[in-house]
Image (cartoon, rainbow, N blue to C red; front, side, top):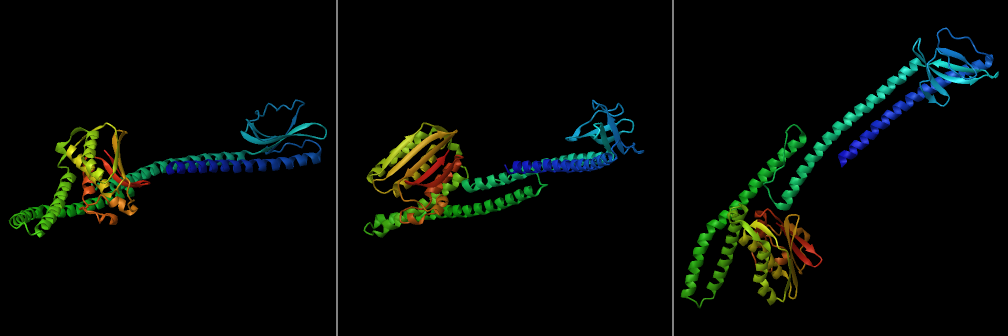
Length: 415
């Protein structure tokens, strides 16, 4: 849009420039010719008769008959400059004259002409200068338009890639660089190098957490077995039950970390098959209905029939995590609404619950590992539930986002 506006403005400047060059050149010629002819007419009026012809043919005094016809030696008028002033050409010497017809006091008509050959040549030259200027400016406009289109497309490409990375968290995305000769392409190359470095660092952080989870899971499992054995031998000690519960929570966290890691590395695509998403969502609702009834929470469903290629167990777990969170944070006698529709070859699932709103700065962070908003720290959990949701949806080439609504809170997934 900006490129088109720039082109239109430059084109308007070119046309205006050409117009004024032609206008002032023509004005100079007309005024000069009129001034000379006016002086000659005054001279003739003073004489009261037709003066003799000049030797150099710089002036012409041509008496006209009653029909005001031109002599045969002069060509017909080429054009009118202004009203009453016309241009004649004398074939024998190829001179051009500006002429005007004047009626003397004795009612005789005379045509007074002055040689404007040099001025007309200058005018023609200025016209060519104007045309050349317009052509040059139009070439500059066209080249500028092409360059601006290239710059705009490159800028939009960088902005689109950055926006996709921000909204999807996919650090594997890169800016398309088709050439290396321009500065904008160099910006794309540098940005890709920056993304490479960020992706490498993020991979290192995830690898460390995954390694810790993997390495500690075995000794924790052993420790839990020892505590369980001690509890069986000494059931009167209640501390063993608390220790078992803590060990189970830690193991659950590590297992969730490892599962998210496997999903993010796309190691579970082997289980993909064509499935009915409406069946998966219905199973999730049926599974959580007893828990919702305990809190007197109403679950309203509007699910369209739709199919997709995916992992049924992972999708069940993802939507189960969302419903579980909705029930957890919805007050008693609240409402949870699940709406699933198919639009533009994509399945949109909206799950909304009547709860307190989440701070706007917390919304993008809800899908980060271990992130818990201040208002949710009183609730039991590890902060990995929505991280698993994001990993599962990303595995299915979808998107997930959280929003505040007038009625509470909403999570939207697109598959």
